[in-house]
Image 1 (cartoon, rainbow, N blue to C red):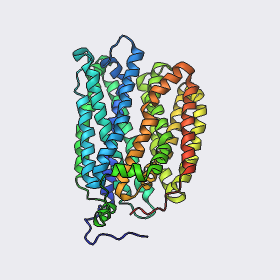
Image 2: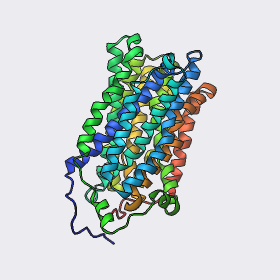
Image 3: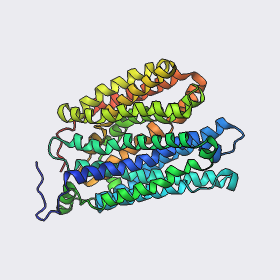
Image 4: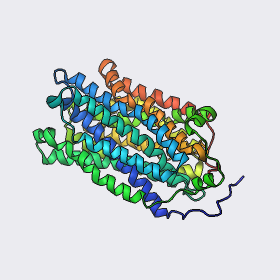
Length: 430
């Protein structure tokens, strides 16, 4: 049954403003997140951890990288609560500020040589802040787009926040590549790595300006008018929407494993074991990211036409197959590494495009912010937080093929969840 609109609705957001606000925020958030991921491989093991054992320092640095994924569900619960209680706009602004301030502080931290063990502890605290902010950012950006979408175009609108991921990655990798080419290695390690973290403050101000110009979504206005808000959205999601939470988490699992194998693990393994220079491998990754960006709108169009479940099922089957050929491709020199990034990131774009829309459609408006955010970020814990660490351990002890099997196994779980789920393309989104 269709829902009625409030008799005095707030002014509607223009399409351009909605899409710009949803895209700008996630681009900034993912830029901040990825500069940490890059620095966790290239810089932090040398500056924030004891240098006596480089391998242990790298693993410890990757452990701080993983910390943010455990912070993200906490951010989902906190920001989701206020997003479902007081509105999307104010919550999105608070999430962006939390993420942005944490990132800027990282660029100002003293190193292990200066303050000893306090350095990695402060780094971990800031990393927690990054994850906490991103836990509230993603879900709100998806809802800002999809709750303003016209009929039949929810996946298309919902893919704009998803485009923030490749754009943020291009920005982060591009700036590290530029620094690598303009600074000596000593200058880069001494101060150059700090510049992207500090410069993100400018991007945050731009994002805040855009988001302060938007109004609440029509769907949330209807919830207010009909007095449908729940007292504690987190408990409502756990008690009344547990199946959706579990299935949604499994559906997003393969996406997270694939992405962080292609980014953090591949950069670490490629520059340490396969003989690539930092600059060369960043260029290879950037080539792959272009295919990531192209796959997102393509899969969104298909999802609006043929359904979210159908689209994700065939893409997930492709990810399973990719896992079995990952090792021979990645080990085949420069051409093999480029092919690995193109195929892998192409699949990543195809699975990522409709994912946010599908997860948001699993939950009613009154708990949608909390539910979709929790689902996405719980998948981050199981699929991404330990992926670089686990893949490094598997490759070291059992060879690179084991990393591919790890990816295929995760994708198989996602495929099972898709079989058990229902199509959400035509659900009432009011």
